[in-house]
Length: 207
Image (cartoon, rainbow, N blue to C red; front, side, top):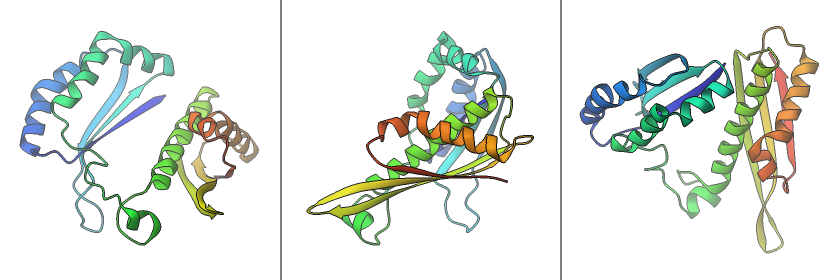
């Protein structure tokens, strides 16, 4: 099973977003062939009462990677993707602070190393989920984090290592088999290969 999670940032005009999504985008999306199931939901907020970074979540499920690729390449899939900019005015990073303080001090916001680590964690999780599912062991849950280490070497700031940590729930899979798949995903994940000049370590645990 292949899963596509779409996270919409907070829109400028929530009422206009809801109206367009309901009356225009959904009819386009419903024409897509190959969807096993899908769910839609509005994010109400965070547990501590703070505003949520996302407004709306769409969860799409396809039977296989081939179905996923065929769906996105179909006329209806292309039309759905092309329609997103017509209503999705929000963005996950649109209002995120970025400064010297957020990188080297304790200021709020993000930094390049954090973004690299986030991209690596998400890409790795997708690669591992695809491998496990293809081997007949679809995971119930994969929790993945990545930590990029930034150090000053001489006069230059350098990313000297990345630590991947994954905790998985995979029914019927032995710990040794999970460790083997986890290490293979670390080697074959596109972002791992992009960052191949940086030492990458992995901690993999099976619940």
